[in-house]
Length: 391
Image (cartoon, rainbow, N blue to C red; front, side, top):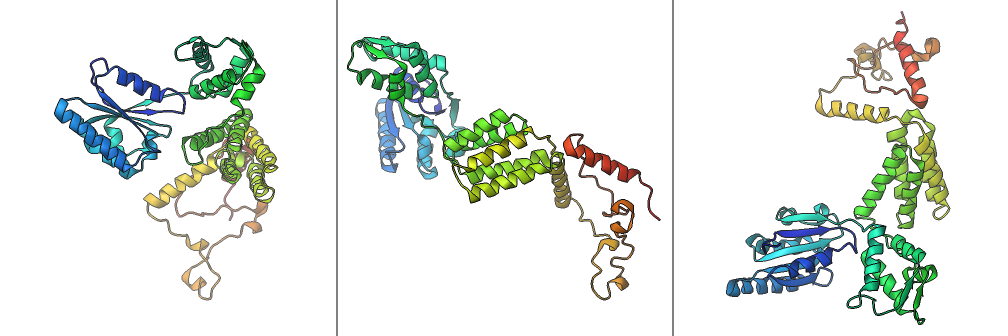
């Protein structure tokens, strides 16, 4: 930037983390023209006009243009393609800001010509520093107002803003300007009235949706009921479809608990039924019960690994024939074809078990772990292996 040469940039992060501010700072440190568009309010016509204007300035005066497009993810793929030739030729330097994962929201050719920078939510201490600065700044802030900021009010603004500087500054401004008293006693009650209830960042088709679902499942798998309940609450408060949550719980019960606790899938299935039968808000109780049960249950993915290995073999290897003694023998003439001949009916033997081949060659897919009920399953399977073959 100091050399007045920058590549196209993609700023990716949540609202209020400084993406637009940094774009303006960059513009102020270069000799380029700076033009700005918002993808929500602009269409193809506006983009083409700016690109033609940028080309004219480059050809007549040699001055390059920085084109800043806020909410770039709102442009569809065709609109993004319009930018490619001029970005590639250096007619414009693109700075795009997006709250959506650029690898999902933006065209690959555009990404390949840009550097991606990730912005994280501001910490509480950073928000506090920002608010104190706004209170002291007489030129661009609220320094001309006498404000007695209470420490607990500052803490509340930092907490409720969720790392969004814009939200914190707006609440501060509302609180100061709406007060008629001088000096302004900015107490916790004023802070609460100014910021109101959190508007949770939750898009049922965006990054937050998938990130929260991922954290939710991994917390259940990791046997942390408190974390799992928190992520459940985040999804419910964000307006997530409880049926989506119930399906994730049911999957986790099979994938991560399995036969270590066979009751887990029954609890999860009951939660699915409760969601359909009762609905919100009461179904949150069944969801919470299922989540805490699964999070605290012993874990095994042995059955998950078993079906994965077996399907890999089916897809990639030679198809195994059904052994003759296991084939259907319910029709006339089956015996003459050898169908079912030699099959041993398990219930005619002690303990309902008989040693006979159920695959034409030895394969091992299911390997129970030494946890929960599956330890008993493993012990039983070992006993079967040690039994002598029946005559």
